[in-house]
Length: 232
Image (cartoon, rainbow, N blue to C red; front, side, top):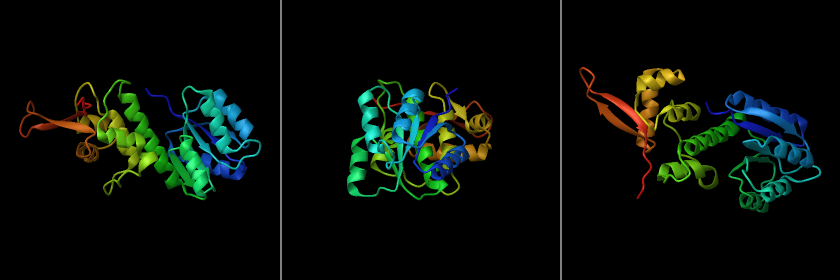
């Protein structure tokens, strides 16, 4: 079972940090490992914990968020995903954040839905990476999912579909076998009809493949598997 992604929240305003912590907890798929209010403390905590994600304010005492990013990059090794959560909206700050590898940028103030959309994107990106060997050739939809934070926002989902459930369905589709909508629904706790809607959407965007099962009586059943990466 995949470990719950860990998060370090960094903000000089304790009330704002607490609010952002509540937003993350409400999402339900991430674990807050630490909260820091100064640049040096944040750097120490990130180096100690090695979190999967950092919610990073730029205006910090002792060490700015951008300076902290440069220190982390200089360390080398596996880098955390970063969501900039800042009041900085000038072109130079955005340019420097992009140059430092930041793919998600939220301007304060923002609501829980905006942050949770970014968290959903990160979960989808993780699912693509976890299911793909390092040597795998990714198709265009997988590359778009990985780079969505850097290049563009994903297309809106059809009415009635949620990004969080879509991510859960996507992770449940096997790459080494096939499952029906009923089986996938049972795995993640949703109805067959709901699972089928999500699976058909994933098939439409190229994330899964469909096949017909003629072993069942009456109409053939539909089974799903993760789309094989193209090697062309």
